[in-house]
Image (cartoon, rainbow, N blue to C red; front, side):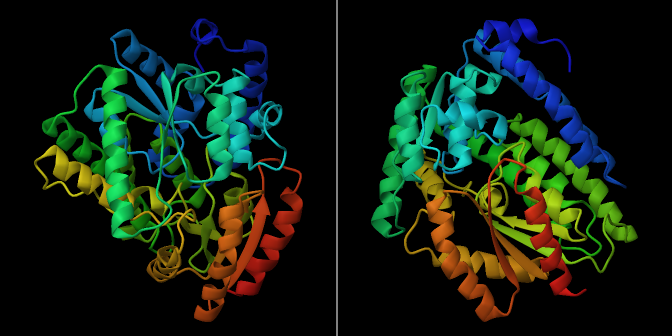
Length: 424
C-alpha cells in the first residue's frame, strides 16, 4: 500500500492501532485468496482494491469532499443509494466484518450483541477505519433492535439519520416506505445542498441497476459446472461493490464476466466437476469476513450462491426505469426495495421461496444456513428455513459463528462431515 499516513492523521485516526490492522491483513489475504489455483485474471482488479483498501477509495472520497461533495455511510441494502447519487453525493457501505474492531465495540455494547454491530461501532469509536472517519453522515435503519440502539450511541459521535423500515409487506407498508424515501430525499437534499431532479434520479437509477445487472451476470456464471470462479472470489467482489465507485465496479465486473463466460465455453473451472455445490443462506458477511467460504472451499466443496445481503438479496430485482416523474420514481424505488426478503419481516415466506428457487437454479447439493452469533432474527427464522429444506429433500446444516478464529477447526470438522455426507 502507498503511504497514506498523512491522510489518516488528518482523519484523526489512531495510527498505532491502525498499523496493527494493516500488518495482519496482507498475510490473511495471501493465505485465503492469493494461494488459490487458476484464479481468473480479472480478479487482479479486486486484489488491487484490497491491497489499497484504506488508501485509494478513501482518497477519492476526500477529493469529492474537497469539491463540496458529501459522503453518506450506510449499513444496509434497504438504503436507496440512488437518492444519494442523484443529489451529487456518494454512498459507501460501512458494515464492519473484522474481529479487530469487536473489542472496541464491546466497550459500549453488550457482549451478546452480534459481531457485525460491535465491529461497526468499534471501527468508528476506535478510529481505525478511514471510511468510518470520512462519512459526513451515517444512514441507519430499523432492521433489528441491536442496530436501533447502536445508532443512538453512534449519534453521540457522528451525525446519524435513521430510516424507519416497515416490518410487514402489506400495501400500506409499501406506501409507508415510499413516504420514508421521500423524507430521506429531503435529508439528502439538506446535507448536500442539491435538489434531486427526475433527470438526476433517472440517471442514478440506471447507474445502480447496471451494477445489479453486472452482479447478476457474475452469479449466473456460477450456475455452470465446473464452476468458473470460486465462491471466495465472488464474495470478495460483492463486498467491494458496497463501497467502490459504481460505474468502475460495473465495468470491472463485466470484464471479469467476459473471462468467466469464455472459461465456461471451454469447460474450464476452479473445482472438479463432481465437487459438491453449496449454497450459503443467512446473515451478511461484511469485508473482511471470509472465514466460512474459506473453510467450505478448502473442504472439497464449491460455494456457488449466497442467499444473503452480501449475495442475491443485494442485486435481485431492478428498479423500474420507465418512470419519468419524481413521484413515480420514488414509488418504483419503494416497490423494488420492499421485494428484499430480509428476516426482519413477518411473515417472511418470500425468503424461503427464494432459497428453494436458488437451490434449483444453481443445482446445489446442500445448503449451509449460517448465522452470526446473537442475530436473533435469522437464528429464529432458521427453524422455518430448515423445515422447508427438509420437506424439499435438500440437505441442510445450521451453523452459528462470529468473526474470531476460535471455532474455525470445530467448524471445519462439521463442514467436512457435511460435505462427505453429500456423497458426490
